[in-house]
Length: 122
Image (cartoon, rainbow, N blue to C red; front, side, top):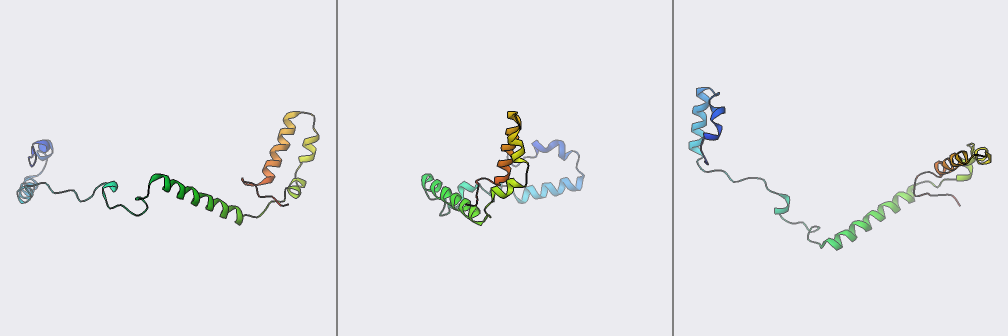
């Protein structure tokens, strides 16, 4: 029952008599349950961004994502793949007869290209 000590009887039995009397005094002071002070975010005031329809919000987020990608790509230094390859054993591996060794050479080429999306010198 609301306001009853019955659900807490096993805890109250282990409390000191002074603690039990304090609890009784608190229960007498506040006989009605208090209202919750916090709530769900969805029940709060809506912001201007959440008032947009989902289709428009998706478009805005995609556009912002594309702008971020473009900025990151523009700020990166272009990779000179030919000079990077010269510093490896790519040519020697491509001349080897086994296909698995040629795949290793292609892995070297991919590593020399740098971060995806590739930004290469012309």
